[in-house]
View 1 (cartoon, rainbow, N blue to C red):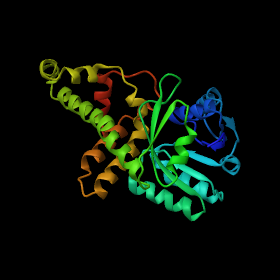
View 2 (tube, one colour):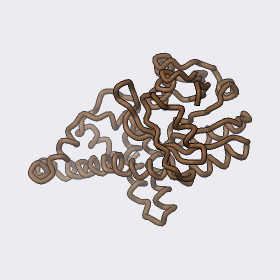
View 3 (cartoon, one colour):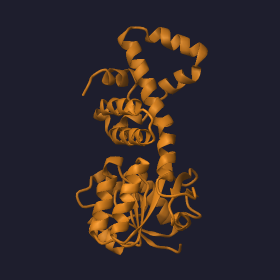
View 4 (cartoon, rainbow, N blue to C red):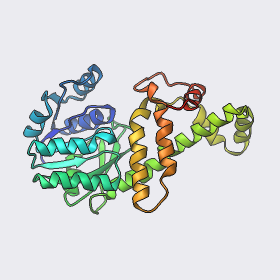
Length: 280
């Protein structure tokens, strides 16, 4: 695709990074900063995104809408975009279950638009540190060309809507699910007074776990938006006949860390452990 106008309505950490990549690629990227935080405004400005003020104004100027928002807001955003009469190309790049992606596709297509399913993996893209987006759906090849030569590597999975979201769900099952499991194990060990013994044994048999546990982490700062991601992963498992309880429990664990929302302080594992032992 040649240079286009893209509406990326929510300039969060990931959204602004992807938007910045599109700007550097030569596209015009619009956002809607009415009622957004000062942090969102700073991120959008740093990424070179332009403020259309309202979602409706941004969508009406755009050929492509790129949805990058917390998972619990994905369907509502699709409904709002459809309500604006959008007939262009809608790319849902959120961490949602395949079934949720198919529901979003039905909403967009009923309004006359086209839908591509996407799943972003890895850290927010930046110059010299590319990110990856997996795509599925009939128009996935068109979306892939949006990012050619940018900091985002686009991979067409050559399958129907839902395939990219399924991949993202499986990928995040490990990366985010195991972090929740590891932190919960340590919380129980501390509660029972066996944490020192556990760390000593892990140091001998699983030193990688000690490294992962001790490493400064921004995971608690992101926990508030991983709650719904775990719930979406649970839906993906449930839809395929698999037990969903592990990821519902992970959602509960992340809910106990909401106090660290957007906190850059990197709380120690001892603080995280104490927070995990206090039910919401």
